[in-house]
Length: 278
Image (cartoon, rainbow, N blue to C red; front, side, top):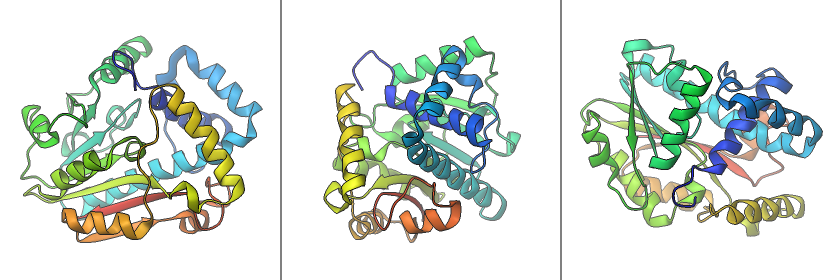
């Protein structure tokens, strides 16, 4: 993203979540605030999605990754003693404002300061209340220490925590990804992370590759280029090196099996959603 500007890819992801509610009725992922938080932009975004059926694939993938993340969070709270959630690269994510766990779960939203300020203006404009259970922690992933920033905001490293990091990894350098995963895995209270990543462009089929090239041009033009791709073996080795003991990687076929042929995937390559835990 460009300095002094909020993330435009965060706005785009929010638009896909909202369109999924309006067009598919939230079949994969239900978010009653997804349309509201977009404010006056919502109608135009949903109308565009209706007129552009090619956007259905990425919309369903974004819905699927959110559903997986929140399901893993709920499972962690109920069965593994999770008491904190950190939303990395929160963008216009709405979980904190509809948190069904109340005081059982303390939530931290981490994002670039400019994007965070933009979101808070959106919340005020649309009348979405900020709960007491939420803390904002402005962080630049490429230049600041994640754990130190979180602890300054009141995060307890001794409490088991879930980190949700959606639509972030492709935009980070390998060094930043390694540092972020290491910070999470080394928390004394134990941690879990849910994030998405993409297979290398060279592994995609012709249709996927063409769609990816168009998307890559768009995000590069707004100053948020794709920087990182992984094949599963590379990614799993990186997670193990960081200290994660359990890894569940849902690749294209698994997502299609779980959510249907419209889950934004074709064949064996595309987007993955990973849960990993220490």
